[in-house]
Image 1 (cartoon, helix red, strand yellow):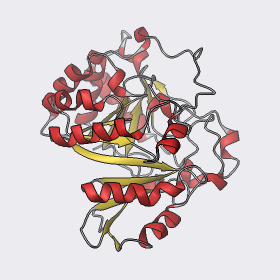
Image 2 (cartoon, rainbow, N blue to C red):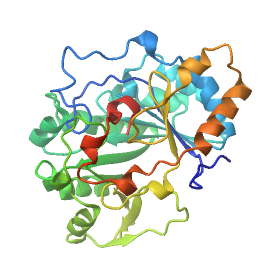
Image 3 (cartoon, rainbow, N blue to C red):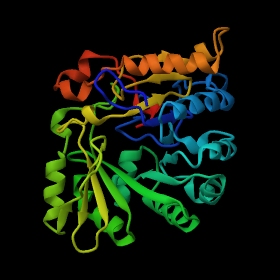
Length: 335
């Protein structure tokens, strides 16, 4: 198994299949920046599925056991279902998940499950229609996403919900979202508003800490921590004492998890990033299309890149961090 300069194993791979999305969430792809004239990648610039097959095979050989397909919005990528079916060659070795905003999930859930997808993580930041519309930047209400959740559950897919919490925007939705997911037995993960990229207007005073979120939950429900067997868990796991349904806190801002980060990320155009807050990535696509390419050479390259990894942005974060670097946008490499 590959380990980096800080002893962190390589076990998770996130693959962005497109930088396009049908929403304009304020913390990821704000409409003021990603407007009608914004130049997204052309299809010809995307990493081909055959190239991704080679990359995935080598990553699995190096120890990756979790693969998550992301975006942008991955359900917008043509040929997605066929690609997922091809990944079934690793079905006995990997957990295969997909992160989606849920807008197109109702029409896609059954075919995704049939193709071999294990589970979906659905981004839903509010139940209140007005707040949800403000946060997603489109005139789309949460009912459409809730229909997608039901379709995913009916198809047999595992379902988790992600909620990014921003002070003064949707922090009043913490308890309603908790009730919604608890009633349905769904794992809800509360995510601190993070300074990913440079265009989401992040500031520390807009962060609702995991501690504050936990206090809100404990005011209504009995909560208890879940024993974690791995130090490489990103989410701090809890459960409700009355029914055992779990929830999680992702506290990148107030309690860094750099020490347990085991994730590599590939952008839609084939750049490899070893940190969510990176400023640059390695051009895998260029290597894959070069005369020097072979699977063995790719294996050696990935091993060398991961072994040199020493990223710890969240350990070093300050209020001024957002202005110090030109960080890659979340919509480009997924969350």
